[in-house]
Length: 217
Ligand code: G16
Ligand code: MG
Image (cartoon, rainbow, N blue to C red; front, side):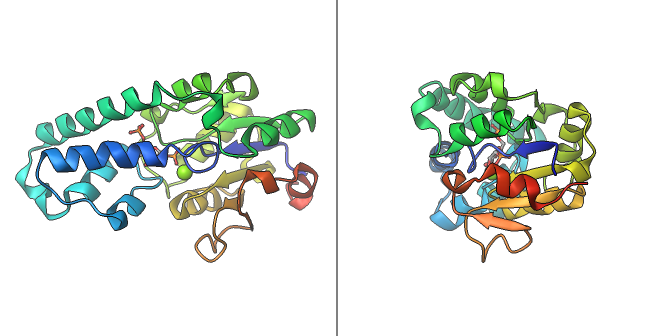
């Protein structure tokens, strides 16, 4: 059985994607760029500077490195202001219950979110006590689908990757989990998350006994 769970945040524990989306849309409008749902969809799970490149598209060449960092900072200001309004009522259905069940089953739990605001969000949601470790996104050099963030989570927990189950809503995240040598539980659409070992529609379907038995050594 697995010894640990490694959770993604955005799209799994809370729907912060809508707030990232709104912040990028505001920035895009301010600099005269169009922003449609297709672009919004492509930002899921992508790190901050990677997201900026998607938002800029062909306009990327118009900006210097420093200007791009300033744009990303501006977007982050909008996002940080938005998440200051969040609380436990903004968790996705089943999130808290899944963490309670995992704890009761004696599993270690880590958070592997690309967001530099992940620690603040966990506090706002009242979930800090559930996590044995929250990976500091600022310490991660390579974005998902690179396995770095999931390997860092396993190392911090002191659990072999093969004994961890990773839980993700994004294709890049599922691929990162698999590349880390973990089993992947997808949250969302099975047709989209085809590389996952199992897929559920949301954490309301998280059955700890079923998934812990799924594998591990
Ligand atoms: C999240 C979101 C991404 C966001 C990224 C970085 O990832 O899905 O849209 O760009 O974090 O966020 P920040 O700008 O706050 O550092 P995850 O890994 O929780 O799905
Ligand atoms: Mg996600």
